[in-house]
Length: 221
Image 1: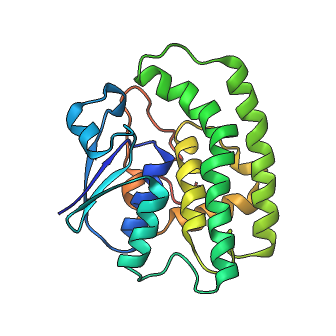
Image 2: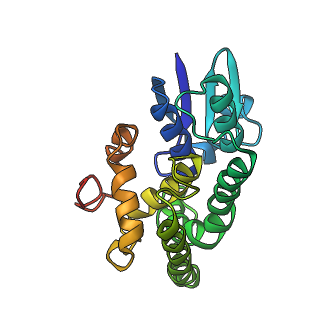
Image 3: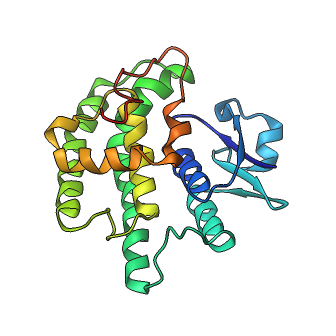
């Protein structure tokens, strides 16, 4: 049995979940309240972070390393291209979303509005929320520019870059923080990725106290 210790709205957990589902690997999801620093969980990952994946007799942490393992151990369907330059572009964009987008947008919107309440760390910082709301527009502009030239974010084939971006944007969409109508090219991309079978389980996620908007699970928005 494959087990993934996760948090439903974590973009890093969502990236791993999408990779597992795309490769048709059945997984048991175990929600982990990592902020409580349970000793059993810390034995799985001393860093105290999710996701943590138990697979093939091993326990893996760090979403990037997990996805690289899945790509090597379960290469079909591929989420990294064979060409070295194309692989670099995928990895560059994964880094873009998991580092820059996360720092400038996800941490300012999702973490302020949801995570602080769940972990009882106080109230949202309005300055951070405003900063995230400004920054997401620049990132969506950049995504629109990429998608004007390519079918998918890193090229003409679906890749891990799309799942990294979708992990962040789907979590933000859950709290209605993406203005899809202002970015039709990105909206069309998200509609395509949202319609994939791998996405179905994410669309069933619910977080107590934070009901999703009606369009969240609607494949046609």
